[in-house]
Amino acid sequence: MKRLAPVFSFLVFILCAAVTIAEENRVVVIGIDGWTASSLSKAELSVIKRMMREGASTLSVVTEMPTNSPTNWSSLFMGVGPDVHGLTSEGPMKAGYVPKCPSIFALLRDQKPESEIGAFYEWHKIKYLFSKGSLNHSQHLPRMFDVSLALAVAPYIKWKKPSLLYFHIDAIDHLGHTNGFDSPRYLKTLEKYDKKIGKIESFVKKAGVFADTVFMIVTDHGGKGFHHGGDSPEERYTPLVIYGKNIKKNYTIKREVKIEDIPATIAFIIGIEPPEEWIGMPLDEIFMEQ
Ligand SMILES: [Zn+2]
Image 1 (tube, rainbow, N blue to C red):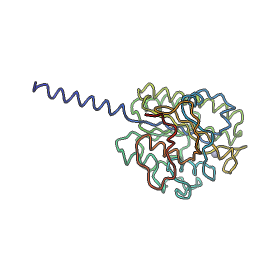
Image 2: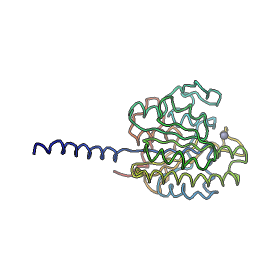
Image 3: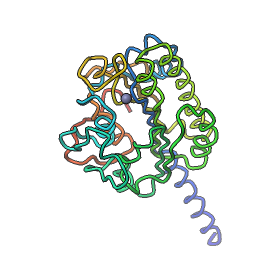
Image 4: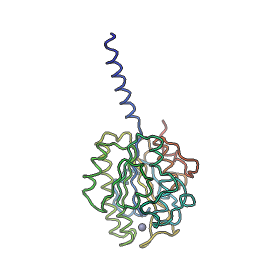
């Protein structure tokens, strides 16, 4: 029997390793820059609407003022308002910029150093918000470049199975500025990206980690006419969809949600401790009873 001991320990090791992998929670965050709540009743968004039916959602996340990208992506990644992160314009977002607060990516890197963390983004400046050295993979993708999903995102998910993946869509905000928020071209392009979100979901399924994954479709602000930055409901109140492992189905979030509740919820799902200064609270009501 003695000779079997090493074989037995090896089998126990394999079993334990398998259990550890299976129990990890993963989050895929898809950020649609400048996504209006009103677009949901105007565009054919079959993937996003299915995720809403099979998940939890609200159309009225309260974003920070001014309703622009630097302010709100910072709040969404760093869990604090602009009074603390201090970024309200694009000006400082250039080489050498060091965010005042750690991002959700940096916190995960610190607290679970072995985590695989990746980001793909159509807006290259967003990389300045991630905190240097926190990502294993960071890649700028050209806007509306259809093949980048198959060439870059699919193999990354397949081979690396990230714990936290961020995918940033800039084309929607861009069309809001050039053609108008909720204009026919804005809505048509949103429909194209809806299909891309479905593809990302299928990559996660093919990688065998769908059962461990929560998907979050988020935004930084809405828009009105050709602009955003102001305090109108169209700019300020935005959609949020959360779908996947342990998330209630067809559930409309009841409490008022602020943008800083989003990183608090991501932190809760992936099991990291948020810093004391974070002002958001995890959206407890979206989780199924265990
Ligand atoms: Zn914009």
